Amino acid sequence: MSKYNIPDYHLHTLFSGDCETPLEDIISSALDKGLTSMCITDHNDLELPGNPHDDDGNPISFDLDIDSYIPRLLSLKQEVLEKYNFDLRIGVEQGAMPSTCEKLKNYSNEHPELDFIICSTHIVDDMDPYYPEFWEGRDPAKCYLSYFETTLYNAEHFDDYNVYGHLDYILRYGPCPKKKDLVDIKPYMEIIEAILKAILDHGKGIEINTGSLYRGMDYSHPHTEVLKLYKELGGEILTFGSDAHDSIHIAHQFDAAADMAKSLGFKYYCTFKNMKPDHHNL
Image (tube, rainbow, N blue to C red; front, side, top):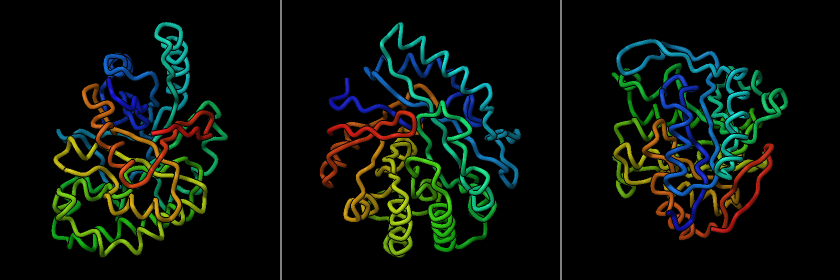
C-alpha cells in the first residue's frame, strides 16, 4: 500500500492505438496496489502526420473512438463503484499540434462526461520523437528546441485541458543523458519558462509523469529544474501519472515522486471531476 495513495491520472488501455491492455486488467491491478481511484486517459491524436506504426511496423491509428470509449467507461465506472467502492474517472490524453488546436478547443463541451484532459506534445517537425528515424542525421539540440517551440505554440493557443503532460517528453527518447545530474536543460529554460507562464495564464497545471523511470531514466517528467521553476512561478495544480500502457506500472514510484514534490515545496496534488480540480494534501 502506498503511503500517499495518490490516484494515477495518466493511464492507457486498448482504446489507445499503442496499447492492448484490457480495462479490466487495469482495474484489477489498481485494486491490487491499494488504489481507490484513478483516471483513464486514452490517446486522442488527430491527424497524425508521417507513418505511425508499432514496433513490428504495423500501421496504427491514434484517433480515439470516443463514441465507444465514453459509454464503456461509464458502464465500468458504475460497476466498480458498486462492487469495490472504486472511483473511476474518465479522461483523455489530447495530442495537440498547431494544426489541431482550433479543432480541439471545444472537446470537453462536446463530451461533458469527461472529468479530465491532458494536453501533450507528441509531434514535432511532423514526427514523434519516439521513432528512431526522427533523430537520424539531425542535431539533437535543434530537435529539443523545436519541440519546446511547438509546445509553446500549443500552450499559448489551446486551453481546453487541465494539465500539460510530460512537458519534456522529447528527453525520453533523445540521445541526451538519462540522469538528471548530467542532462543539460539550461539552454532551454528560457523557452520552458515561457511555456509554464502560458500554462499558468490559462489556469492550467502540469503532471509529474513517472513513465520515464521504467524507461531507463532516473528522473520523472518534467526535469526537476522545470518543476522547481513551475513552483517558483506560482504553480499549484499537479497531478501524478504513470503513463502506463500495461497493468504492471500503474502508480509506478508515486511515493518517491511525491517525496520529491514535497522537497520542492509542493503541498498538494489534484484530482479532477467534471474538469474541475480538487486539491489534496501530500
